[in-house]
Image (cartoon, rainbow, N blue to C red; front, top):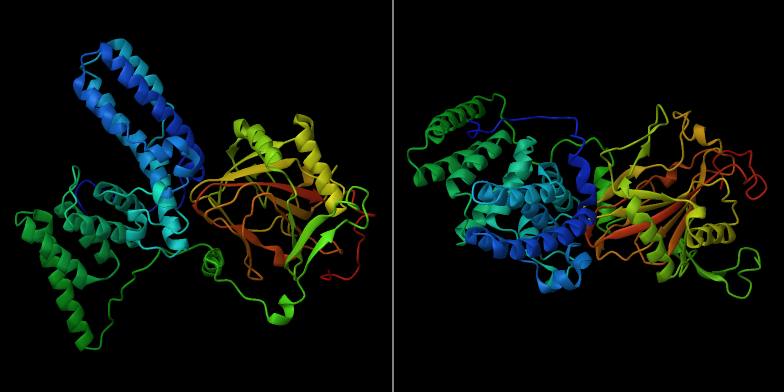
Length: 530
């Protein structure tokens, strides 16, 4: 039944590199720069080489539009553009290597190989494909919307379309993970585009129908599997596997009908997304789509905007900061215009060379490690590295009234297309006795989250326990306490960073710890009171 040359694999452990799709936007921007440089290099070097076929290949690769050249960050903020670039530099550059291995000089081949090592690999391309599927699920998009590039929040100048081959490749990625739900979605999209007259150089309807019949069969849809198999045989009557599948599906369908008539157990369809490890997935994704809980008018009336001077702090008596209540229980406030664009650009400039895969604290060992549910790149900046960082740290202390000398360094994070951080707590729970022990500064009493970019679509910060959704706004910061005055954790602060649909999300956060706050936020013996 399985399509030729394909093995069904069920893997519960992610390959270390497949999680690299967390940097899809960041990596794509670097790749775009390299791609432009390498295409220019190809055009130059081929003037001295006898390789007109390679020159034609270079012309085909040089498809960067005027919009991409003028605004690469905006262009690559569109997930379709990012995926296509990742695929192009991985797959088609390999085709170029094959093309020139026997025709070019040794020096040219050596130069080509050196340049290739900086480009994405198969794991990166797979990760980019998974990011598209995550966006499809989270924001309840259909494959045609993604294929045409007409995503919410995207401009027409940034859009490009997925080809039949692209959709087919997305389906194969899902198939390799035994994810037959997404296999079906993308193979159907590929077939639709073929039926509408789009040409393909790599795949035909027979191959797509072969995958489709098996994927829907695995979901229990025997009649649809039979229909796809019959259509395949109408195109290729000699297809051996399809001929065998036809008999098998007909037998299974007859048996199923006989069981139904005899009152036996029916084979049920299992169509839908694969089983999920996150119990609050549905609520999390609803909040990401802006379908969260709405406050009652009475609660809403208690939220205000005000000028905040932190009890007449000398810096803010004359020029107070603008404070807005975002939520009441737990109290979440937003500070507007809290940093300048120049400060943001300096922080990003300092962070970019240091960006690495973001980590989490292991709940058992307390050791920092990567996790598949946190998909972003991060860097840590100390106050000594630049006066701007020191100034921001001091501003956090002046505005919140908390001592930041025991706080962690400023963490800068970049969430590219599909980047997310699933529901989590910032503080260490009672079942994590070693959390932050090596810091010697106690638990994380509060979180300061600074938005350093606007996001065209997606990327909200959502609080799954209470139903709050905070949308990114450049130059603003949100603040909340993770612990009650008694020192107990406030489980209402469980929150998540939603996947970025279109755009590029930059944030920085300051985790403030208990030590040093003894006289700034006094303890309360009553557990669970604000």
